[in-house]
Amino acid sequence: MKIAIGCDHGAYILKDKVKAHLAEKGIEVIDCGTNGPESVHYPVYAKSVCKAVQAKEADLGILLCTTGIGMSMAANKFRGIRAALCSTEYQADMTRSHNDANVLVLGAGVTGEGLSLRIVDAFLSSSFLGGRHAVRVGMIEEIENEEYGNK
Image (cartoon, rainbow, N blue to C red; front, side, top):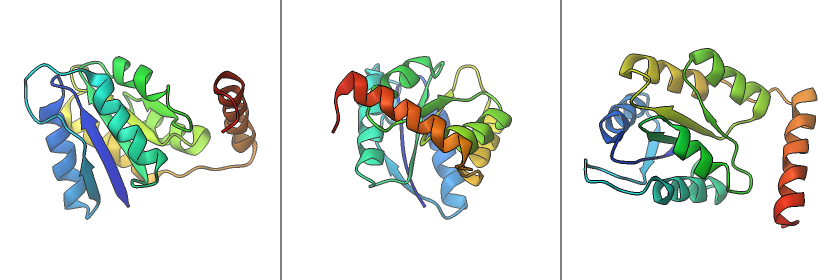
């Protein structure tokens, strides 16, 4: 499994902890930045991660910012990206199994390190159930096509 990960300046410390956690599990990580406290614009990093997922350079993505809200908003603008801001393990499991989410978003300022790592584990250990859920994901794709055109 390969994960693309990116963050803004408000979450680079947690991003590094998530990266180390993934490395311990033998998961390859594509680090899309940022790597320090200097102020940056979160959409740049959302774009990098989402483009890696779209191009299948990464199986899944993880985005982090202070609240997770801005990254979620930016990520969900990309065709085929289903980004979910999760603050519990239950949400992470459900969004993978029911929504086929392919990008996890975390808020470093609202979710502590231990819980964040458990959320990552829940997200990565869950898989899409298909069935009636596939119908719903298909409906989301239809909305994308209506809004952005068939591509």
